[in-house]
Length: 106
Image 1: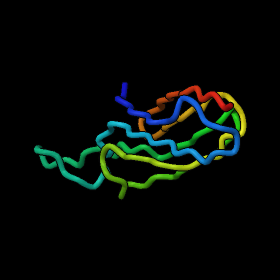
Image 2: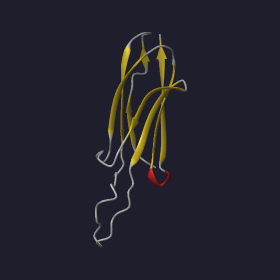
Image 3: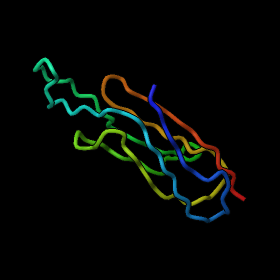
């Protein structure tokens, strides 16, 4: 299981633009680097990141082997209604992690 840090407001006023920040701990092996035994370390990267608000996609990102370890993502959304922001990371070797945050819109 990956360690995840999410920073999002718990409340917002309707129409406010809010920032969502997320950091996931992941080594991000490119598949090009040799290990101590000289063998290439298999590729293991996060390929996709998506964010939905009440199951409507509000942000998506495609990653490549050039992304650093422990990728940090920051994006802005308009607070239209109360609900849940669901963040999902998927990648190589069946990697899939999901985190969610509830935001109350007044």
